[in-house]
Length: 204
Image 1 (cartoon, helix red, strand yellow):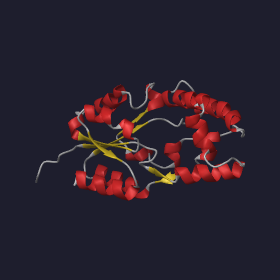
Image 2 (cartoon, rainbow, N blue to C red):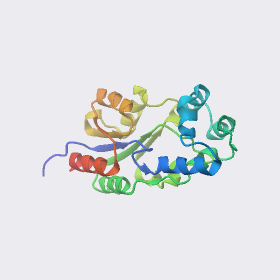
Image 3 (cartoon, rainbow, N blue to C red):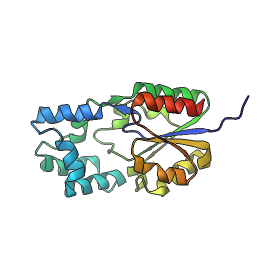
Image 4 (cartoon, rainbow, N blue to C red):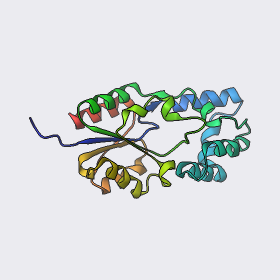
């Protein structure tokens, strides 16, 4: 039997193991009477909203505190804001199945995720993916976020593997170079079908 090229699969969460985020947020905006795109503009385009989200990612702001601060920026109720906006998000079924199959075939499977907060809404539980992983590295628990190279080194340390033994998948191009610098093979997640096909080719 030929020696495997890789020993571990490291997966981002949002946009890799999930589907329907854009549709969920769009539907939520409509329900709240907000113009389309309001969520993205508040999180990425508004200076205060952007700063609040960076603090949420690294754990200096809890999701509950983020909800309280973001509600007024959006002009909506703050109660479980993240959970309401992401309520229609669902697991990416084919990617989840690939991860389960890889783990059953002997690959270590890890998650490396910039956090959306965990309480009161746990997006990882909502997508039913906690049981997929041998190692889960989430930015708010670590105090740093991708693309900081230190968080990539932490997931390798916890796997006990060099980067060359790992495939890393993320949907954000800026998050790939730090993994490549540590020797990982990287794959940019685009649509689910292409990502599954690319990973299947790498792992087979």
